[in-house]
Amino acid sequence: MLAQGGEPLKKRMRMNQAIAAALHDEMAADDTVVCYGEDVAEAGGVFKTSQGLLEEFGPMRVRDTPISEMAILGSAVGAATAGLRPVVEIMFVEFFGVCLDQMVTQAAKLHYLTNGAVTVPMVARASVGAGRGFGATHSQTCETWFTATPGLKIVHVSNGASAYGLLRSAIRDDNPVVFLEPKSIYGTRSEVVLGEAGIVPLGQAATMRTGSDVTIVSLGQLVGAATEAADSLENDGISVELIDLQTLKPWDRNTVLASVARTQRAVIVEENPFSGGWGNDLSATIAAELFGELEAPVLRVTTPDVPVPFSRSLEFQYLPSASYIASQVAQLCQTGKTPEPWWSQFT
Image (cartoon, rainbow, N blue to C red; front, side, top):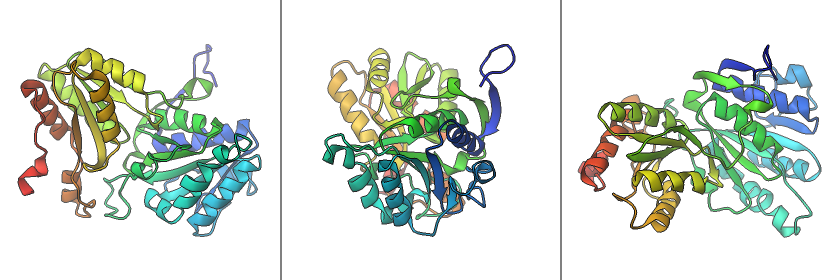
């Protein structure tokens, strides 16, 4: 898709519009791509991520389903093994809890169990994250439900451009992909490159800015907060290299390790409780591969080990803010020691 003069077509759009555009473009390019889930068709998705698809492609390819995540995912596994490329929506990531077997035992294992004879090219999309006042049961990210499962790929987007490009890649991939979308930034606008030029490969991190003093690695909506923190730190004389991981499984070890080898400091910013978050894997890898080269311990900036609060003031205290990230990074760079998290005074 090109603009006049042969340049890639760019459009400023909301993230939910970028997701709908990615679905549209893949469905137009490949008639084996189908899309379904709760309120996906008639309503255009509860977050308007499939708006216009029913009118364009009809009810055989865009379908509303009963409120049964087991049926949605189970049928997607069957459809994928039979030659389709289903993209199904699980409205909130927590709802994977009632159909986890279909994802981690069935979809993830069939290729292995059949010695490669069967592939499962399906995408399971879900909204994730805090910041919208949905409370403890609808505000988690839950990536770690999937990270220990061989056979799955995991994507967590941070803006409209990554949502468009990574979703198109995920649909084309022959493996089952868990595709996570921060609900708090569905309405955030950004410039999106459309068409083939806008496709982002899975497993490839994005270096958002280069720097020399510290590497910050983040994912999802906290990439925005990390960007603000980096701006603040730069004003204080700390040069930040910022990496948006984009794909959590497989994560881009080469990009992360090469960056940390240059800056000699690593900070991982994640929207997960401190215990058991995905940053543990990155921390262990960085420490093992670059031991002796680091100027400071690897720092994880996370949420506390508590459920997501419903109260708006508490919810925004729970999420790492730009000012909190900047403070933690500054202390690490200045002292060479891991600073205490804000909640340590209460434990």
